[in-house]
Image: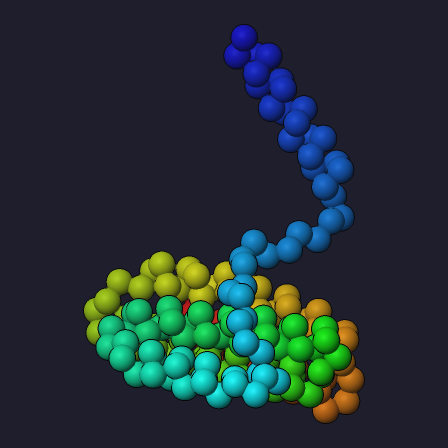
Length: 166
């Protein structure tokens, strides 16, 4: 019975490796729903709410998680705007997303220096950085000129932040 089970596992793994060879798998990380997009006339209310929430969070570890959430939302908003052909606002949103990501990394490092256990935060930041890189690389194929330069800046900032987490 054990030999049959081992044989089946080997066959499944072999078939999976043969048929899965050459495929590029997406990063398994879900970006947050962006909600109101930056092109909305009431977007300033969302920004005010987010900044107020950020001000009230005193725990540095929780603040880092919240900054990562804001970063994910901004990236998703930028992606939506670029897909809606509002490339200038979208590219600016992606740059802002990576600024939030950098703040999340900085806050996480501050929490670590204060003696807080941030292993789960750094693990999430590492996966998020890979997802951000994947999304930005995809968006770079959809824009040109000044917007492409902004996305390149965002990608570099993301890479610099990701290197500091490792």
